[in-house]
Image (cartoon, rainbow, N blue to C red; front, top):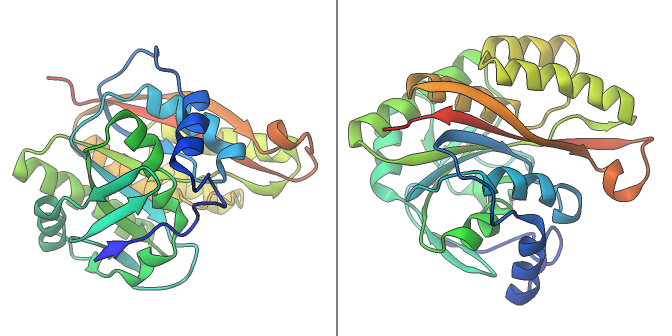
Length: 271
């Protein structure tokens, strides 16, 4: 199956030339690359969140395969969905699914199900791909979309990912695709996002779940973030760093109702 882009021309340019030029302006070619197990990167329109995605991806030492976990904005498909075969297209070319790893994850997991429906119109994975293609056109992908489940299930999925990666001895980077607080005044969004970011930097997925619930933090990708942290700890995470934070207000100048964006790397995995 070929999964065609659904937000080209909306979230980012549909023209390859325009898209490359836009990404070039948002990445730092001279940034020191780090050995990372995973990262959190936003998925809004590039004019709003592209500079945060560009900053965090610029710091990443690339591997051959990226596992990208996104939230389910559409409500379609299975609750915890993985694609293990096929190709994703963007204006910058094709990205093949790493079927070997995808099928290993599916066989290992008690929760993920083979399902393409959840992925067809979901933008949270798609918008990460052009940034990755800019640096490495030939990487492979394992796309996973998580809808509503318990925190315990999100943690188990993370551990299952780590187990599969270890069993195949794969070199991967795991991306949790997430924006932060949605449509609150700047001060409120920053206050809440600081609480969520602190829990992530502590690699404490239980505390992240608790704060999201208690503080009503509208972080759309908290489930992918929980799975990422759980996986990263199994894979030897040594710490995390906030690379960049901003809000949509920094683009629009309207701070009365903003969306927050954080770029975070989780370090470790060195030889």
